[in-house]
Length: 77
Image (cartoon, rainbow, N blue to C red; front, side, top):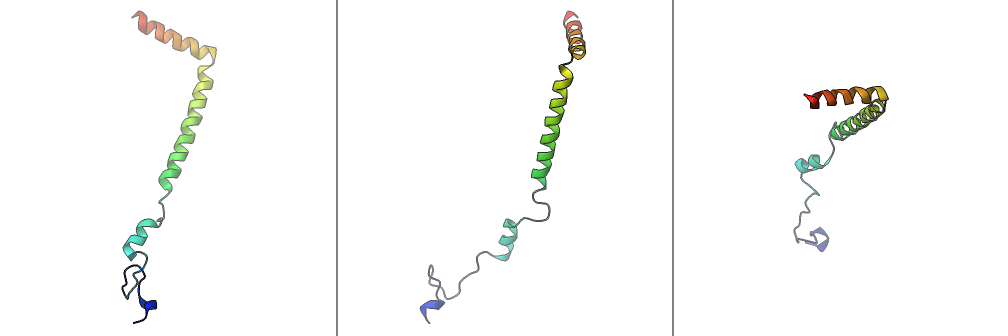
């Protein structure tokens, strides 16, 4: 037996593969693995757009007055 056939770490004659076949698929992305991240990004953009729209709407004097009237009537009971 020559030293070229030995695994330098263990001294075994058979060098194992880097990872068993079942474990390799665990680390490789499957078809829709990144979809959750993309969906979160789309929802975040939609929420930011909606918040911007609300900010514009709530700055109008008519809407402010309507909200103030609702709050006044609720507090005066």
